[in-house]
Length: 105
Image (cartoon, rainbow, N blue to C red; front, top):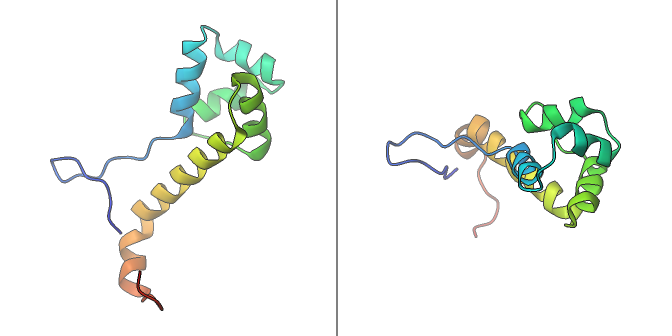
């Protein structure tokens, strides 16, 4: 698969949606604790998402969308894109070598 590479030829690590969440929290001038309270979730959930240790679920996406006035689909799409990038980095070359397309693009 065609991976994004830096000029050095090294693969760029995918950006977890927790990066976006931390930026929004900071932009709104609230703490992670305050965000968790407003979302009605444990603070550990927010902390783990921000650290990239936890995925954003549909439930969390609905809550984040409501809190920040954006669509929950944004969060689900960010999570899906991250998951696909990680899978492509881990298995993309193997899949390209083993799986032959039935149709051409």
